[in-house]
Amino acid sequence: MSFREYDKKTFLIDAANDFTARRISKRSFLKKTAMAGVGFSAFNLGLLGNLRKDRSSLFGSPAWAEEMGDPAVNKWLKDVGSKFKGTKIRYTSEATPPTVVLDKLKGEFTALTGIEVEIEIVPLEQVLAKATQDVQGQLGSYDLYYLDQSWVATFAQDTFDPIALYKDKADLAMPGMDWEDFSKPLVEGLAVYDGHWAGIPFDIPIMTTMWRQDIFDKHKLTPPNTTDEFMTAAKTIFEAEKGNGMFGTGLQAKSGHYSLECDWTQVVWNHGGSIFTKDKKFSGNDEAGIKGLQYYQELLKISPPESTNSTWDGQWQMGASGQIALVNSWDEFFPGWDAADSKVKGLWQAKRPVRGTVPYRAVADAGFGEIPNAAHQGGSILALSKYSKNADAAWIFMQWACSKDIMTRCTLGGGFAPMRLSSFSDPRVKAKEVVGPGTTRHLPVVKEIIDNDMASEPDMPLWAGFSNNEIPVNLGKLLTGQDFGGDAKKCMDAIATQVNKAVADAGL
Image (tube, rainbow, N blue to C red; front, side, top):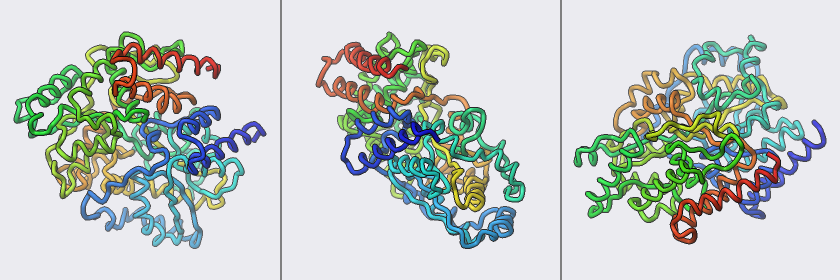
């Protein structure tokens, strides 16, 4: 490792620790990480400084935790894993749904192998700090890393390629691993760097259109397929139900928060625009971008007033409380709305996200690897450290954690979109495609979305700062009436000036 690389990692560690201790602001932290070439993907940006909420308590009796696993895999664990009895492996992660469930299942692995597993769940910035410190000193303090998709390029040289490892260590290869069973769009979008796997896809929040069946039936509405149909349905619901305290839709439009940027990005894409063009200039202020923002301003008029102070958690609560009957947002919302004591149990339905009425801007015409499409996504991978002192034991655990059975049970316990194709068709998952706690009835739609609609934000170090600061701060001023006099073009021009200057100054 060169001194320059070592110094960069020290800079990252110090920045993350300063942010955790609140010695620097989120804005300063993101600027520092951008300077070091590290960004954050969709959804995870808003988790900085906090832990993702675990909604698994809403899913009823954890029958998935009482099963005994795949008999063939269990036999393999006893035969191979027992050689490492007494070994302890460590894994650090943000509180993703699969990590939370895996923490509850790890006792099974230990009982079969004698290998102890410590899963340390910390806020996202500390996941970055701990992983960075570990690879900087090649310490091997952690055997497995949770890596945001935007970190893969930074850490790929420090992790084992699981495909190569599976071939090279045939004596430790888990039977039935079936690498072709991992969703190809997720592998390509999350795990592959420079032609090889840096880890295994592990988590994928993705935008979905969801609506209340009872309200749509009441007003003889058809679930929307386009942005125009979405607006018409939302306005119809608002006019018909405002006397009952229901709004047309709900937004995650908190001023200065990444959740607002997520909403904005989607309406720009859906109106034929992009965040950057191929000349690396901000394009939110072109004709398509302005139309997208004006569309969002119209949605705000028929949304709960608290939308401008709400992130995704507030938006989820709008759906849970019966304030809204139509929303385009994260698939992770859905299972909680079917909880046993939910006020809206069985009322919500899911479909592929609404699309614009004009073609999406081509990837070749966008900038910094941006992929305009209908479903904003943000995901992560599980990776094995090259510096692990217990790499063989950790590799056994990693295979087990990402096996068909365990991935399926994580889906049943966490309600998240599975990484494996077989999980979607697993009888246990199909059996839960009914109304009730731990429902999976939204997952067939989620698979269609992953296969056809995935969109990705720009892949650039400065993006973390732009998407948490310049963009949502100025959008917030527009939407709350603090500046720009309601003029979408003035707002976007102000953002363009700030963003283009920063990109030029950085030499990108």
